[in-house]
Amino acid sequence: MGLNLRYSPIDWNSGTKSFQITGKIDGPVIDIPTAQNATPGWGSAALFKHGSYSGAAIAYGAVSADDLILQSVHISAVPVAQNVVGSVLRMDTAAAHSGYFTGILSYLTTSHNSGGAKALYGEVDITATAALAGNHQALFGEVCVTGGTITGAGKIEGLGITVSVTAGVTIAQTVIGAEIDMRGIKADIAGETIGIKVTMAGGSNYLDYGMQFSNCFNTATAVINFDLTQGATACVMLVESGAHTITNFIEMTGTVTNFAKLTAGVSGTHCFFTNAAVCAVATSHALQIMVGTTPHYIPVFSDLSWGSS
Image 1 (cartoon, rainbow, N blue to C red):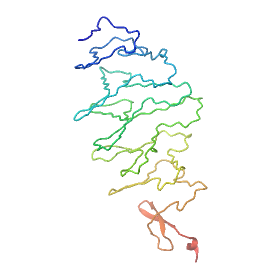
Image 2 (image 1 turned 60 degrees about the horizontal axis):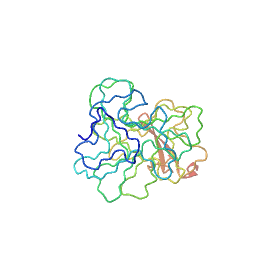
Image 3 (image 1 turned 180 degrees about the vertical axis):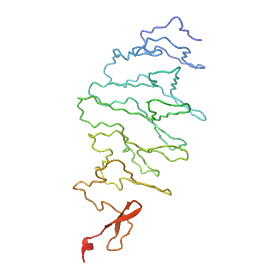
Image 4 (image 1 turned 45 degrees about the horizontal axis):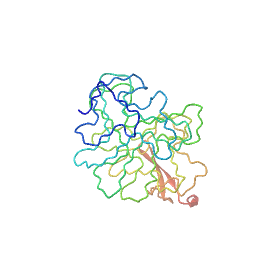
């Protein structure tokens, strides 16, 4: 044992490097094997403290000559058959509780003009030719329920995002709950490029809805808005059934004023289009409507000559 701080803590008051280890150590460089005493509340910490969460912040002043980094790790390794993990934080409940378990809390406060802020940032760089056997993800979260009977009002969520704006606040910018920016893809790759993917297929998997919008209110302009004003789009919605049968493409329940509304000024080649010719007289297409089990047809004519006698 190189140094025992059980009874006599050490205080460094100055110097460029307060503590440095140049040799190799078998085992943890710092090992704290027992629970530590800490003053309850956000103002203290059991293991590491640099400033007080609930008190005054430690002032570093203007940062202009170089970046200010409070913690830094840079290594290289080859995970041949094992994992390489930068940081492991594991916490287990010891008894029933009413408070929250939070693995990492990143709290940023902006009270001035700001160039930007990110409470959590992840990046994976692929810089050379490589065969990728597994997924490469800048951010990954997983919730596993492996046993027991789960009750209560709390939800189980793989990802939760909350955005709040206090009443009376004035904001000129757009407020977005989640944004996925795909404009950085500059190469026409062989595979597909997908902004959001929900995988639902599987033999014994149970999923009620791939996507759900709930609790809409009358101040909302629309539940879904396709903003296609930046350029021409071949297709807004593409449904591929493959070898499977889609029972109902759209099913509506409750009270609906209009199934579809074409606002004045809408123009184009087709409002509705089908390539199944089912009318025998002077038509090229028709819309089929099922009334009960009986099909009915609305003919669509290619010109106005259908009305001639």
